[in-house]
View 1 (cartoon, helix red, strand yellow):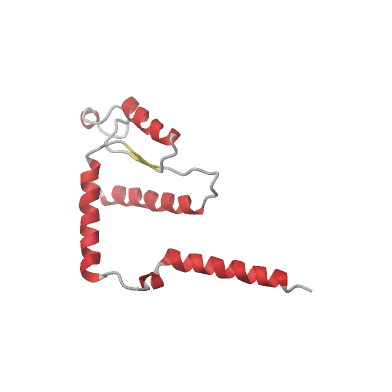
View 2: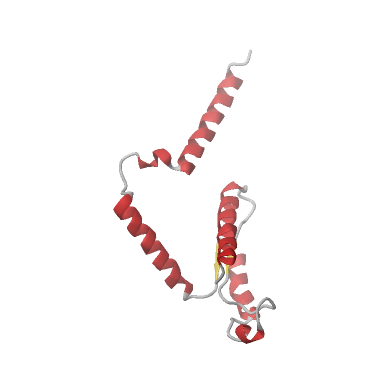
Length: 130
């Protein structure tokens, strides 16, 4: 599989996860994670091995209607996901073990703290206005 193709899939994942956090609650964000689905993008001989488009749509629509974030269809993909998760977890267990206060460099924690500080400053400014 081409590295540019894989990189674009990861970019869409990151973008969608970020949008999920940034959008107001009344806007649903979902990420469709298809496996090999029939399309006009590939050669016909390869598409003969892919999941039928109608079957994929039926599976995906149930999840979209239910408000799921991750829209999944190909069960075996969990094998690849679990292998990656296990490898990453092993690296953390070996090289970056948890410790008290380890959120000190966590981007989300820092951004939340910054937003809270900003809100507090705005409130203090409002309360101290003559």
